[in-house]
Length: 217
Ligand SMILES: [Zn+2]
Image 1 (cartoon, rainbow, N blue to C red):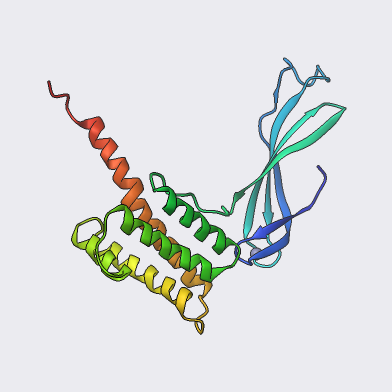
Image 2: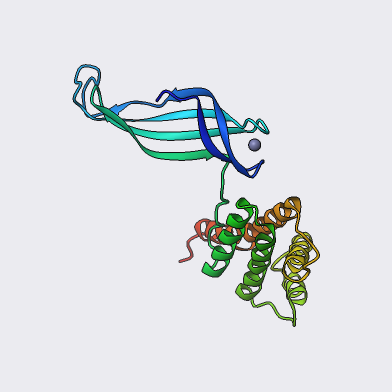
C-alpha cells in the first residue's frame, strides 16, 4: 500500500482534509500456514496501523486497516476504521431506548457541525431522564428541580442539566441566537455526564451491591 496521504474528516477543522502519513506499522500476521513465508498460497490476515497529521491544524489521526490476501496473488483491505479521533460518542449503557436515540442524534449532529440540532437533542435527553424517573412539574425546569429534590441528581448535576436546558431552549426558540461550537460541545459533555450518572453508574452500582450482598439463609 504505497501511499502518503488519506482523505479523513478532521473533527477540529470540521471538514475532510488530505491527511499526511507520518508512520505506518503492521500488526501480527495471521495465517493458516505453519510458516506463511514458505507456503505462498496460504491466506493471511493482518492489520496495518497508520498515524497521520491534519495539514490545517496538525491534529493526529490513527487509522486501522484490516488486510486479507494470498502472497504473490492479491492483497485487499477488508475494513478501515478511524480509531482516533473518535467520531461519535458511545451511547451510555442502560439508558432507555428514547434517550439513547436522542443522544445518538445529538452526537451525530455535532459531528456534522449542526450545533442547533445537537443542543436540541441534548435537551431531549433531559426530557427522557425526567420521564424515566417520574419527574413532576409543569415545565422542564421544574421537572429537573423535582429530580434534585427527590435525590435522583445532586445539586451540581442539576446545575449542569439546567445549563443544557438553557442552551437547548436558545437553539429551539431563539432564531437570533447561533449556537457556538463550544456551547454545543459543553452541552454534550454535561448531558453525557448526566446520562452516565443516572443510568450507567446507578445500574452498575446496583449490580455491584447485588454481587456483594451476603447470602441470607
Ligand atoms: Zn484539522
